Amino acid sequence: MNKKVKVFYIKIDMLAWILFFPLCVFLITGCSSYSTMKKKTKRMIRDYKAPDEDLKKRVAIAFFENKTDFAGKGLKENFLMDLVESIKTSCQDILVLVPDDPEYPDDLSNLPRKASGLIDNFDLAKTGRELGLNAVVSGAITEITNHKETRGILWFKDIHNFVQVQVMTEVYDTQTGAKLLDRSYTRKIEDEDIDILYGDGSYYDLTDQTGKISIHIINDALKSIAADMGEQICETVVLQPWKGYITSTFAEKVLISSGEKVGIAPGDIFDVYDCNGVFKGTEKHRFFIPGLKTGEIEITAVYPDHAVGVLSSGQNIQAGGSISPKD
Image (cartoon, rainbow, N blue to C red; front, top):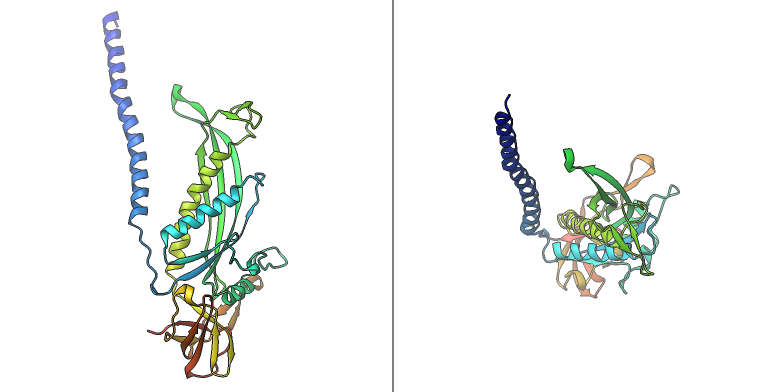
């Protein structure tokens, strides 16, 4: 092969690469842009509506643990603020109670637990009923790690630093004690901040000290998780029918643990259901069994967090029974 032919083939290879490379970039960035746009569009079209629009559900955010080595850095507190904001934005008809709320009940400061350390779902449901809650949310920040990955092709390979954050959550239904949601959320974000400033004004190189992770990267990951988790909690809770609970009875009068804050008003009529049956599952887990309708009550007096009603039909109305709006 003569010299001119070689030069010709070299030029052809270069021309093919020049034309092919922008196409690769377009496909990569285009797919990424489409994915981002699709995700944003998905969030824009979501409009969760409760089946009982006149009554607001009460959801309590219980104790969230930080099981990582990054304790005392405000991560849990910031995450909870973002999570509550996400829930409120996704579902405006949900009342959210958080640990720093002045009205936060002391009974949720220390969740009931079994000898194994797991949350006692049955006792938690009983506590939630007495507090007029429809669901209780718990969870933990379980992982914050960083690692390096080699990415790219051929001579474009490079070492990238990634931070991985994982948070799990559980949503308990107060009517049955069952879990409405049990899920872990993971985010892996590339940390491009090679030089990170210490508190004393000095710097360190993240590429050389893999044990160091910038806090703002962790917060970014947690904020992203909180957004998705809040939407999922909202979607899970809002589709459940509203339930209230009878906490005590006296003659024909009944006291329920929901009041003016959730939208109950004098004259409202509710169906009453037996909700004291118990089912024993595996590993000694217990659950409430929703029962049959036992009567009706009419609300006569309403207060911020409770209401009083009188029996209008039926009999054998007991504490622990559940109520729902009459059709």
